[in-house]
Length: 184
Image 1 (cartoon, one colour):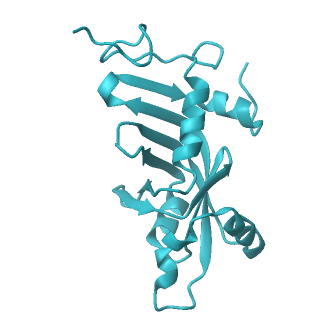
Image 2 (spheres, rainbow, N blue to C red):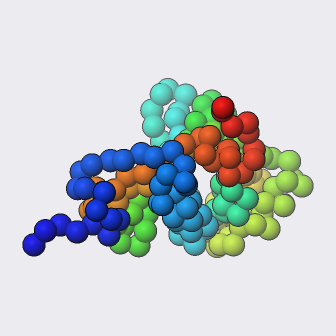
């Protein structure tokens, strides 16, 4: 039996096709919608940072919100190691998977740390699943909450089973959000 891709005849096993806008690729809107769904806070994501010694650090993060796309917010302890790492190198990568995990969404961006309590409180209200804030269950009741604010600069959606890979570039995200100038 011949291989039939659910993504249409033009997607062949092992072949990547990267198109630049929604007008050229019918999967653009789907990737953005899937990203928002997987990173909405209903499931944990994996955050990767770079330590000052150059080593990669990876950890699960559960208190998330992407309701103000292209910003992905995460709650953490202000004294956590990831805060030091982000202040050293703001480039971060997030990974989210579907239940199967047949689909992988990688989010690339630049993070900044928010500690101003009025802004932390505003973002706190956006987080739906605060029960995953394990750092708040520590015996240290003096723990201060900080927010990791990732400005999304690129998205990669991969479905390995079908050889599907699609990337949303920085200027496309900028055009959607109006946050940055779009290159000519």
